[in-house]
Amino acid sequence: MTIQGNVIAAEHKFVSKSEMDLIKAVQDGNKQAYHLLYQQYIGQVYGLCYRLTAEKSMAEDAAQEVFIQLWRKIGNYQGDSKFSTWLHTVTSNITISYLRKQRGWLYRMTNFEDSPAVNEFAEESSSTVDIESYIVRLPERARLVFVLHAIEGYRHEEIATMTHMAVGSSKSQFHRAKQLLQEWMSNE
Image 1 (cartoon, rainbow, N blue to C red):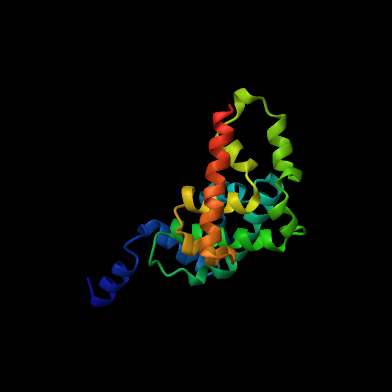
Image 2: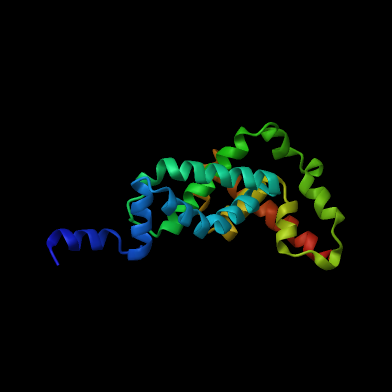
């Protein structure tokens, strides 16, 4: 193998050859390759969008925005990490930006009782409730921090940067989310 071949192999140590070929094809503008990438990752992207937005229609819109931006920005992916990790970060950032742009962002951040997610939760029978149902019920800021920290593994410093809040606020919202979840689960 040539020196150049070794460098290329070292750069993409986190990505399988077939996935890297697919990504390169998308970077070259191949729409069929993009469709394959979409099919491979839509479930993961939508799942994260739903956990962050707690509303199906918003999650669908956010996931659509992720894939629009993916088409535009896939050239930024260099193979320094797993593609799924890079896409996860892109999805988190785009979904949070999407939430900020939505009408009533500040209102939803402070008034969770009026959230459609709470009404959906109240309609479910207690026998069908699972942890996802509890997470959806959390106030938006607490839910964002809880999902990003407890489920997705981000540090509070990263969450603070992504959500434009202080690190202490991130920690406080995480604590609030844990308290609410514990309270709801103990009442079950």
